[in-house]
Image 1 (cartoon, rainbow, N blue to C red):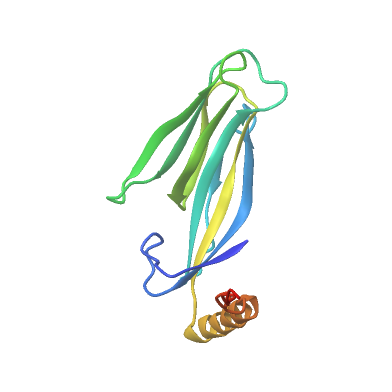
Image 2 (cartoon, helix red, strand yellow):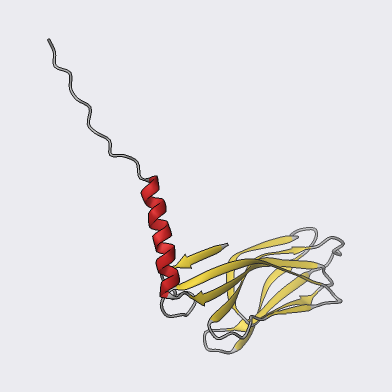
Length: 161
């Protein structure tokens, strides 16, 4: 899935940016209690993790499983926040909506043995060159012209005889 954004204030880039999204998933357990999401170090790309759901996997025990996320806050300091407290009997899954974090992000199974599956989207924002945009705009304009319907003409009144 690929989307062009006219405004890039959400991703912190100047000008126009291209936003690509890819599926993301990781499984946490007592054997693998954390996962660190990091983007590529290319300077013109920004990586984001949009968390959507956290759920217990098959074979989860009857215990609390607390999932914690560690990322940077607005001041550039690392902060850890619990995002889900799952239990097989009362809350096996949590929907986080569109919980977006800039890389690097660490997801940790703070308590419990899991398995816990965390899923969402890996978003990559990149600068779009003007030549790329003009080609895309031309294609969109051509499609719009093809889709336009002919103008509707008003009906003629019949004269009474």
